[in-house]
Image (cartoon, rainbow over all chains, first blue to last red; front, side, top):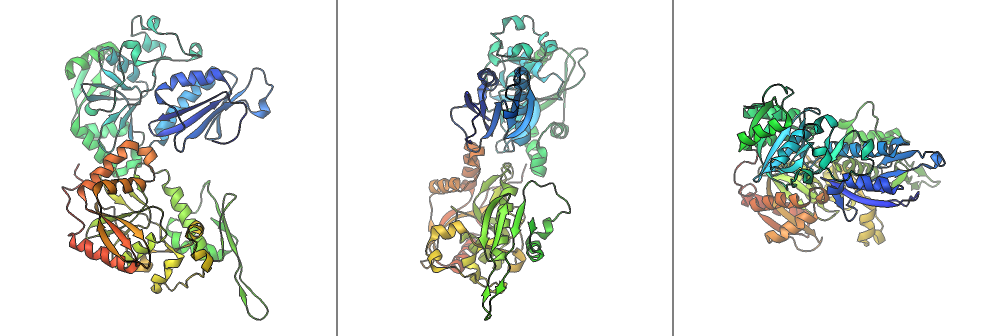
Length: 289
Length: 293
């Protein structure tokens, strides 16, 4: 870290998969709120080659009322706003996006992921397909948590690693879970201005999982009408579909396809259509036993 | 790359020409201030001093354009590979012997590229002079497409190159630390050694060299635990792979023989490795083809 000091009041270290960074802030509430979102990734000390993530009011903006906050990533300005809640939302989004862009030692798939009995269930899907709500519904049925956003595949062992970010649900998705909103613990700072509610596995009595072997892959289809249905997929179709959901397959070139073939060899794959999150979770629970 | 003298860019094209592009939005700029030789009255030649900068940081000062080109290639290699964490990056020389990769992991060692160069000249396809990447999916060794960077004090081992040895002051030669810091190295293309580059290759033998030039040359046994320790030391992105690196490295060492090599003479060591690899039957036994999905 450099000697630059505009009046830091907090310095916290994090490692998200192999992405290491140090957050410095001149606002204690921002540091506390970001610390809540990133708590599973917190480290005691700065990691090797950690890059800085800084929040402060630039010298040219001193005296502005309300204060104009600037957010820097690796010393490059990424966002400015008067509303600290907006800056926080951008910081959370930005840091998760950086993982997808920078991490290369894992093959990453846009997917929810849960685990049971030492086996992982990957849920590859597009952004608005309902990954988070299905993950939450599965956690309510006794699965343990890996991620609601990324399937993290170790190229050495093909095991699925956790990326235990907070589970983000919009109000519409939260409506599927009766009474959950009222049962939640005290919200984190700036929660009132956030477009999503963020939950922990503990909120539905679930726990986080360590790395596990891949056992099932369920592609979440866009069709939510009717009862939930699981349709088996061939190994070849599984490879093709999961490749389309990978965020960094190009880094691995042909070797990535071999890795995905190994994954498909070790896991049963299905397409899921129809149903509410709870119905889908019940269908998966019953079918996969 | 920009220079104050076209001749230097021409020299560099000889090494990096295949990577040239017409336009670039590169954020890394090498700037070479090329020294011009002067002839003093009486005929004495004074070599012009050249300087190389990356951004505003001076990274070379000397009188040998060839060494300055070596410094650029070294910098390019670092920039090109420092983020390639889809591989395990190992500080090691490597050639292909009998269809398998011989890995020569090492702490920073200026004579290592000379040893690799001697084996390439002897017919071993080239993988890397001091940096290789191991693919964690197929366990193959991936090499570098860049020229070897041979230490200026070892260039005399390759008379066919026709490169005049660089004069290095005796005081500097005797101060290994200072000499290492100055790092005078000269680029040598694989084809200049009548060699060729190897495709990604499964590892077959891991040998840890120790250079004590003028001393004896020989192979010694090395316990697998010590080999794992040394291989871990040679890994450049252990902070990325952490515990998972040990799985890859242990698997690698479980399938190939290991040894320690004392290097008293670079040509003798190269001959010894080639002969010993032939005795191993192409670099050792392996169970199955790692490309099997």
